[in-house]
Image (cartoon, rainbow, N blue to C red):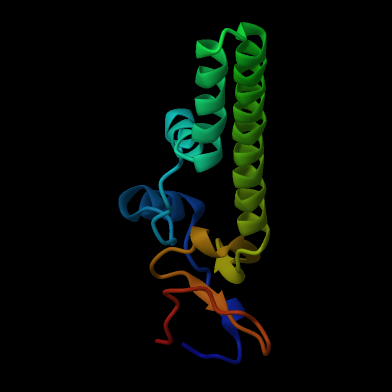
Length: 142
């Protein structure tokens, strides 16, 4: 490849790119498994503070203070709802931040220069690297 004039190369077509992505997947590390609602709920319920509040509610119930017991259980449910909501909001924010910070690459596809996310790179892509650019993973010199 002549490094001084990359414009003479046409690169891959969009069809070839989609085909390679279908066969080989995206150029990214396997993501950590998404935590579902039940998994988050179990993590929160296993907290010592939840046990303490639940224990106090049971003690109040045995002492005959059903009003106190019901209010403690109500607050416990409220805490669970708020905590689960915050967990999912934080997870979504991290996903958005990860997408914003993903490296981008300048490639030649279909004869045109195009900036794509690093995860969209495929085998045989022609990547143009300038001084100071972050090089996406799996890019190698010919």
